[in-house]
Image 1 (cartoon, rainbow, N blue to C red):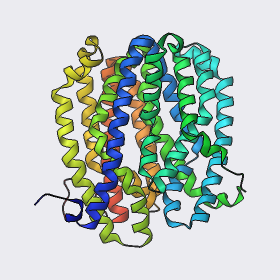
Image 2 (cartoon, rainbow, N blue to C red; image 1 turned 120 degrees about the vertical axis):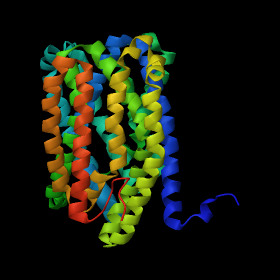
Image 3 (tube, helix red, strand yellow; image 1 turned 90 degrees about the vertical axis):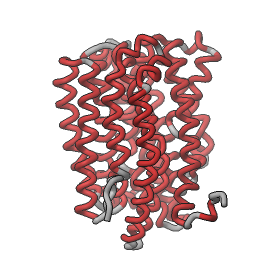
Image 4 (spheres, rainbow, N blue to C red; image 1 turned 45 degrees about the vertical axis):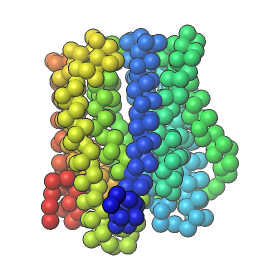
Length: 421
């Protein structure tokens, strides 16, 4: 008898349905994202692609700051509210994050000369990042709204890799016109606006004062999100500072390849976020543990073969983007080790944030950020991009194991894929 959705229990069926859709969209986005890397290296050159990645890293960090932790608040609050109350908090979040993004964009514009001095990039690169920042922040908020409402098709369509795929199309069609990092960033901004512009124009202003009741929770989530983002990009920024743009490109390509390991984890963990909030609010710990165990099993079944493939095929995968990259196979393997621990640890940050333990998540990220910065500071000048890989992978292993223990201590939920009752 063939296996069908109806043959599965309802929790498995629901999880697999939502996760499968997100996974399909994630794979589609990944193809678009890897296509962007392949095309960008050829159109922008290795140095130009490296500068684009530096600009993109600053864009990502500042967008997290602009969201002020309210994206996490949306994920926790929207699934448990009436439609009217949910829309109000969505409108509030959009307005306040847009205003903060404008402020940060102005500060970045004013500081563009300083960044150009630090990274050897012309000031116009950072000014273009400042110009794109408000609309990029709005894209991230709209993606989280779709996720909170479990609109998985829209959530998948608004992922970063999808936007980069649009840039890749423009680069391949009009390469000579957009073949600079600045213009590629502008195309990214246009693609983002094309994806959410109508949604922004439909938003009406609403009072913001009642949002202050969530300031403590939002601030803790802001710190967690910001520190996670800073930690994610610290290696790239420090490679650019200590080495050069070509080294940034040589590092970012192995890093992007290792995300093959997290495809299923992204899809599965993304779908479970609203479910965690709902089950915790209902005090249904047993069902929450079962849901997390289902997630752990799926992560393990998909993540381990992907990890093995990346490790064994490292030279071939790197050679696809350029034969000169094959020499960095060990960088890819080191980064893969951190990613598989990340996958097997489960949705630890979601569990902490969605269960009222956002302070624990914040403290975990503070510790990890300091360790990550210190390791990169020491290892990059000594070992180059291999040092960045060791720092990144080592920190990822540290904070995930720390978070697994913290989740168990504060919620009683076991998340690591090999744990049993």
